Image (cartoon, rainbow, N blue to C red; front, side):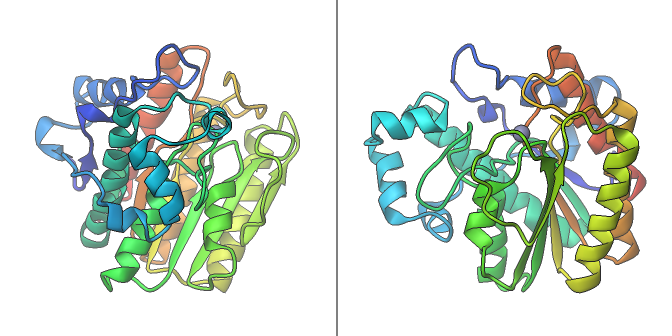
Length: 301
Ligand SMILES: [Zn+2]
């Protein structure tokens, strides 16, 4: 049995058809964790969908209405890069509920993983880049509203910059946003995070880890969060179809260990969300996400 909970629902599956974003990865990760005896059935909690009121803490009522009524323009749907349907909205609300529950449980158990979420390209007033609702931004706002935390930090290690998150929390001194990403890649433009680490094409393990260590030390030196939301994208992997960095699987494991280790050293709870992962072989993506959960276990209290 794991010393923390995993949040998952079979309804995390996004009905988006043939897509570079493999929406079956959530189920495959769960199966791998069970197969490898990293987790057992009782480690999983099923989330409830986020309420509209929760989503409105981050997103504009104009945008939320369009999602609920199905009145996005063709251009808005194109920008999302996934097909709209009420079922897709329901799935995003569930991922968001999962990230809220993960934040809640992380504050109790020290660590919690949402085996989903990480939709960091969603802005207050629009979605883009496969992201409709910024699940973990909503989770942070819900925790603040419930008085569970005052200050949060996002540590976004997806290969793509966390543009939506940066836009949501820009100018808010209660949330520190760190993003480490490939500079010459989507998104354009990149609204400034509290700390952006822009990496050149083809950066590998050693340079990445050195930059991340410096960034985390700087961030945690100038800001003391009550909660870290770790956006553990699998797409800095060298065989990713949408990424241009060259991290190995071992490098990604060292990355996870570094984030958990620095948080643990300061006694800051960590909630984890998955974000991107588009390896040529879906098994690689699944293995990388599953190993984040295996490594989290090393840092449980
Ligand atoms: Zn990504």
